Image (tube, rainbow, N blue to C red; front, side, top):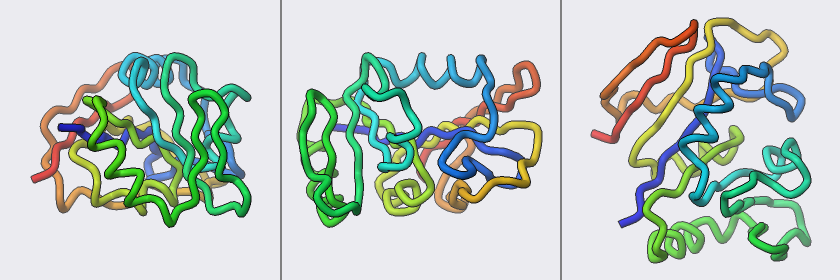
Length: 162
């Protein structure tokens, strides 16, 4: 059975982005993300996709959800879907041979897929980011914190659904 795992890094006030970009560049956090998601399917919103290198994330199947009219197309392993197909997408991914599907943002996608999540892996950045305009949704009431590690000022939190 496919497990859906949300993964994000957030600031002290739940910030995850600003003006379509990440608010920080932390090599250790980016490596952590890469180590976990490489070789798997990653699902993201259009704005998150547009903030990435043109070809998407390497060594991963990139799935992009968008409400932008006329954006339904297939380019290599990059799929663009209209959000009315979210349920179809979940069903399709659940039936595949995917062990893990990563939900990687942004804010609208996290909110619309929260009910899918089996686990959450969250990196807590030590600072606040006043220029943020995108925030990670509150989810903790439905999850149990299983493990928390602090390494070099970053706190890595691992949650599973109750």
